[in-house]
Length: 323
Image 1 (cartoon, helix red, strand yellow):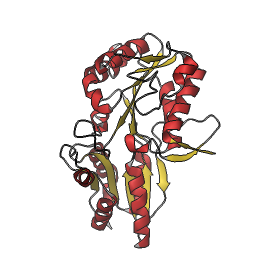
Image 2 (cartoon, one colour; image 1 turned 120 degrees about the vertical axis):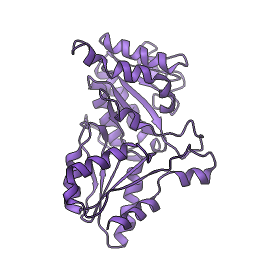
Image 3 (cartoon, one colour; image 1 turned 30 degrees about the horizontal axis):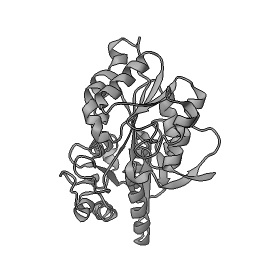
Image 4 (cartoon, helix red, strand yellow; image 1 turned 120 degrees about the horizontal axis):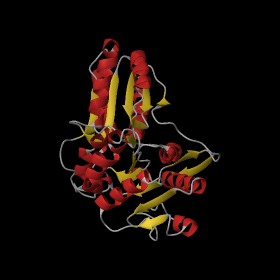
């Protein structure tokens, strides 16, 4: 398998799906001539032209709304937002339209669209540009929420998202675009709702997604030196959520930690922890621990930003409480 970056894997997925289905097109700010804010759409304009790779005005409400209308009309838009922070400007279109039209029309209309957006902290972009907002979308029924960690999953899940008949929120952590990994060269899809056991273990279950999967794996390596065998589960998608794989692991280890970059209070990890309690309470030897960002606006100062984000050291401290 080829070693390519997360960015390149996403670009490949877009090209392959646009080659496969002429109804697929891309729209967003600077996606055409500039190649996207993080260069994910680089080179696609030259291949597919302005009709299918479309630069838009700076209006997220308009971009997403146009995507909803296009999807209802029978084509399959991929909407790129420069950052999920700007997605807040389009929440009415996402929550009240994209997520609800299929239900409110009694199944007679559907909204097969993908909303791609980077998110996450660690780059000194300040409080308004460093947020992880997946919990907002997990809270809303009617949208899929996808959070790939590896280049292979980024490609396989994006291809699945493009083919799904539901609106999909596809969240890419900004720190992952240059991460490289093995990606199959043949055609492949990664299904929604199927977590990946990134590391097998017997003493504690660490559940995570997106960038925090790498923190969990580094923590597991450090724990191995202490004689603690950690199992790491990469959820891949938050809606649908593969609770079965998580519960199976927790019943084996008797301990669970949920690691996520969103704010601790009301975060997606809090929901996951709650579901673990409901499904596997009798198997737990200690309370489920959450490792997350501190409940503050993200600081600009590099050292304060690092302190606000979840770290490997925080995971290790959480393990002390459960093992």
